[in-house]
Length: 587
Image (cartoon, rainbow, N blue to C red; front, side, top):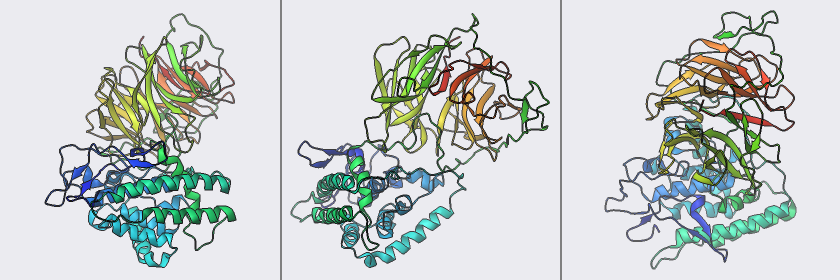
């Protein structure tokens, strides 16, 4: 493509744009935003089309793209398939909201030289990337030939660049990183999948690099066949020498992502302990450390945040479920009682639970009600797909049953807007977007990391967390404010029906408890006080009760309590895991 006169820039190279034909060939598809380079050497377009993680910074702005833009996208694609991790978003890197993690620090079987070549392609400034695909391929050939010395200067230079990039990032919250490559596999399984993947990759790269008029394309098939030979030898020997290219263990990831849409790093609706950084706050930080110490002498009082005393409620006794006549609305929740994670609906007193989704091949999570209480949307993940490369779709159906429609793909954690026209969703790249329910049009909302959005009742603002703190932002994407910030983690915000208070979960006491604050972050109150974990608060339509998930019975169940923390009642009381309750908004 780049050898055409004038060159053609694809501008959207990513795993989901690589398709496999019935005869096993891989082709690059979706030329909808491809552009021809103009006389000034750049492409220009009014469309701001970009794929977070795979698009370079210049593609988001008006500076124009060049062949080096495709180099970035191809490097990001290799980053994804050789690590099993989604590439960092270039805009988040520029803004300091995300730290660049080198490929060889994720996949320990990658050589430093391989990692350096990928990092060079993904440099943020165009002039720092290889000037052409041909130049970049020279370094790849050197790796295949086992000549690591030929690119040692590149590796050292890239290591310096990576160190400099990391030094500019905000402090990242300590967490246990996940590794989708950690499970042991048979070497021969690696070989079979790897050979398939390399055959696919050979066709893909031949297509990408070989479209020319009168020019001989680079011998990419020979390069990848050499990689296959190396992988074969490593699989037969069950190991690898320090001088080998160190690529065999990555072939499973390559095979999986050659046909996958893209990795969704977070399982929809489930809080994960992944390293995160805080979006830049545009307002004064309001510290709220929940550090009160329980006192057995107290009875049913709650503890302000920040605490001014050590008196708190003792562990609340669990009452037998009752059935008040005034509580008859349904609660949606997630349960695995039928073998997989499904969305269940029940009356607000815990009676009449039904399996709303009842699927076999899907895991469903993150239920959200339409504002009229007639529909339930949720995130669905197909469990027949490779488990290391999840992506979910947002679906919706009427609460009384019937057909389920797809709202969007590659998204999770939906939250329906109060006017019913939009949903806030977690997008690939770990930020929040707003998507039109009818139109499907998407708009990025958060500039950095964002999870678990919650709309204010008037639909003008949203609260969300970044696995560490709670933020508030206007629905227009402006006026970002850090609402809760402390040494503890605050997650899963939920607005009261009148918009005056916010419930959330915090681990300030070592375990997770439910807290309340006013809308401005003041007057914090601790509601639950139990050695177990309490998560996922949700409000009743009249604002007098909250439901939440807790493992205080030995497994996760759905509980209900009064707004002052009293009257804790186990609603589900089932040996399966019941989590993520969401109360219908209709009184």
